[in-house]
Length: 637
Image 1 (tube, helix red, strand yellow):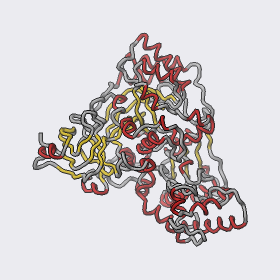
Image 2: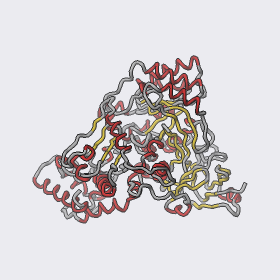
Image 3: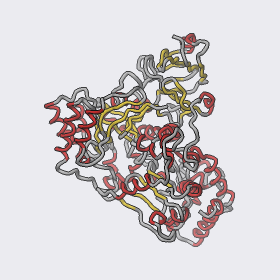
Image 4: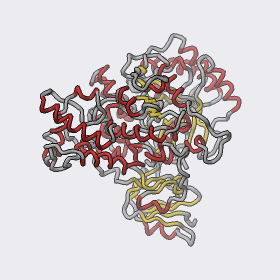
């Protein structure tokens, strides 16, 4: 068969155990038709075949997110300012100020999750005073994970000089949820009718497009990529009625290879939801949970619908398994491909019970964002297996990986891969001993072929193999050989789904023929910042640091970074450690950073103010100098 597309001169990690490496692939009708050496594949080229020379670049199967709230997240994605991957509060607040300047009334500026305070060099959130200072007249809402929300004075219609309190989520409080609904839906006038360029029509393509990280497929919860969606019950006490209605009106697997129904969940009954907030004690599910869950699971099992169930703690998992085992005695669950989501504290006993019932466990990298809070509450030892991925794999239980984006974690799949490989949080804290970390190939399988069981698509995708869907990526670095601390920064430069180029950048930009129109509305944060780590506004971020450096005239000139201390502090380089690699090269940025008083951090934004053990007059003068430099560079932010 003549190929529609051939990629040659590459280094493909196929994940096909019978043919693990290749230099070329041929694609026709959306599937791989040949995978092997250039000399074997090139004869399949015809007059109309498109040929892309990879010039030795690494190719991987397209990544598949096992848990992504893309429909919910996509509804307002174009309206949201993303702090995912931003490494300093100074940059985050500069983004907020820039967005405030172009956001028209009555719109809000929304930062709706996907980040953690620990990712910032300052290790803190902004204060209410800092938010009021940059957004005196525009309502601003900042959601931190699922534990708290910050709202400025303008939200309450008060004077901008008045301080307001952050909303802290209690163990079972809906205060944060209410704030989320208010911020997300207070959007002002919307178009009278949907057009191809209206904001909400564009949002889902924008979230896929702006990730540019190689996610070719996703399992969407509650709702150019393949989507397998699950139906999420809508209101407490009406769960059984929801699923009775849906099993009558919807057919399992209805749809096509790009948008397909995949069953029920992750919310089956509200009484079984043990929402994760590791800053709060573990919630106890109510005594009626088992009865309500059984009513729904029987409906699903009778209609042969697979399900997924949100469960953070083993206490919840164990009680749910009691229900599943009881249903299984009457209606065998074999072949249903049901599974638990998250399972951070699942026990060995529960893993074995899942295996006995033929279920699976879908893990996500929530601990990469909340690991510090978990350790603070439960201790380092308890965190060493949260979740016990390596053990689950050794026991032969079906397991795969995803993000749970867009609120509780970032949608960047490479952050999850880095977490699986390094065992570290996004802030660099080691959670897991080395024996609990995965090698890079195993981690990649967790994001590719392993996920296909969870979407009931085994053998159809997940590997670069003849007959499978032609989904692949060419990342901007070699995943298998780059330093571990660079994995999370990976991006795709070529993403192909079903044999079509859906994203191209760098050397492959000319092959991208699916460019979306500019994000709508015209003040959308996506237009300016793109997505993860503000990749769309790299020049602006560089300019902030350049201006700070130009305004700095301190005596601590670093032989590596000059006066660009902010750039060093917001990078992943260990500039704090005098004995580190950078310290050996002569980086002196640590000297400025260590001297600045912690007490000043209550009054200013920049990452210059971090920590100190001294309060001398010299230190205060040095701190004030850097504050003046920062304010001069940012116009007084």
